[in-house]
Amino acid sequence: MRPPPVIHIFLTVSCFLGDLTPLFSQAAASIFSLQAGEEAESPVSAVEPSLRDLLDGFLKKDPRLKELEIEAARSGLNYRRAGVENGFSIDLSTGSSQLYFEDSDSVFSASPRAVITIPQLKDARIDFTAPFKAGGAASQDGGFAVEDVQLSLSAQILGDYSKTRKVTLLKAQRAFWEASRNLKKRAAAAEKEFYEAVYSLYEMENEALSAEETAYTKEIDLSLIRSMGYAPSSVRFRTAALEASSAHRSAGEQRRRFERELSVFARDCGFQSLSSLPSGVEPVNLEELEPFGSDEQKRRFSGVEKAEWARYIGGLSRSASQNWELRGEGGFTANNTRSQGGFTADAGLTLNWRGVSLSASASAPVSAGGGKPVFSFAVGLNSNSQRLSSLNDEEKRLEREAEEVALADAEREWEDAVEAVRIKRLDLQWERGRLAAQYELYRELLFDAETSFNEGLLSESDYRKAAVSEKRSRGELALSDIKSRLHVLESALYFVED
Image (cartoon, rainbow, N blue to C red; front, side, top):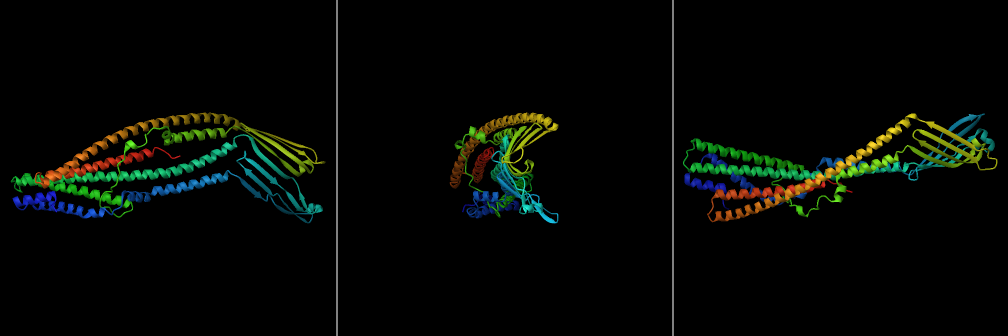
């Protein structure tokens, strides 16, 4: 195996000048051990986790993802609860039950009731009540008496209860969708954070390589000064030696800093350690990406979609909160005490409008000898409701204007995003092309330098500089690929799923 570049210089200068200073020997030995360590660790990198494995581990250890997963599950339960609370229901009760004594006889009375509610049908409600009494005076008629058995059906004739129910369900559904979207968006944001961490590691490794290159240069300068005949006690030799020592110390600190951050990154991904940077960041061909700025993308743009939803649900809520309502009710009553115990048909209307309430009802006998018809009326007035109605109308107008302003702002934000993404993609494409061409030049230069060095036509220092330049250029190209990947992830965060 050919000695490492700096060690080769060390041996050559030793043969010519004799033993060098202990400082130079220790520095050379440290470089040799570093390079030997890199060679020894290279087989390990082949069995290390892939970039996909690291990403999966990073996502699994993200605590925010678990929190959002729980929030999404809770929002799903709330959505189902809203459907139950605003859906078909049956309510059964015994009503008020009493046991008392009358003329030394025990009497039991109750008012069992059944109510069926169908909100989907204009808030329709079927109400059946059957009050009865057993014992006491009722024993003369077999011990059982029934009065005012009533069956009625009520519903909203004019009004917007169906819209109110729809608003409630849509808001619950929206909360569930947003919780699910937040979960998916957090996964994308966590992936972006992962690649940002990888990008930072590549930057730190490049800084370490730059520091090592400086240390190599300082060593060569020291050897040249020694070869020029300067004594170890001379100011120039001591200055060069101190610079070389300082450069090696700085390179070691940069390398240790990189290794510490690499170890932290490995633990963040669920692994004990990593011996090298994760590889496998595939370049993104930005020219093949979907053009940014289509109408479909605008519809799914987070700001526009949110503003459109606010305008839609706001308009639906305002139309559902009108200032008037008309309800109707009809049914039958058996043994109607208000009509001398006959069988009656009942009907009624209730109108509520801007604080004024009007109600009218009638019970007409339908059986012979069923008594006389009964009519009921009621009028109510709430002065505060009248004043509040006008205030509510003004508030609705302001809400509409605010929603239009928010939508216009969101559309301007979309236009700015389109322009920013267009410029960003052009910059990334230009940078990637420049760095790819630069890397090809450095790779060819390294090949030529190695050939010339093996043939004895190139100095060790020139060969070493070509090798370091090629590795650094390769790292810069990897950084450009990660930038493109980050751009794709950032662009995806602009949108929401349907």
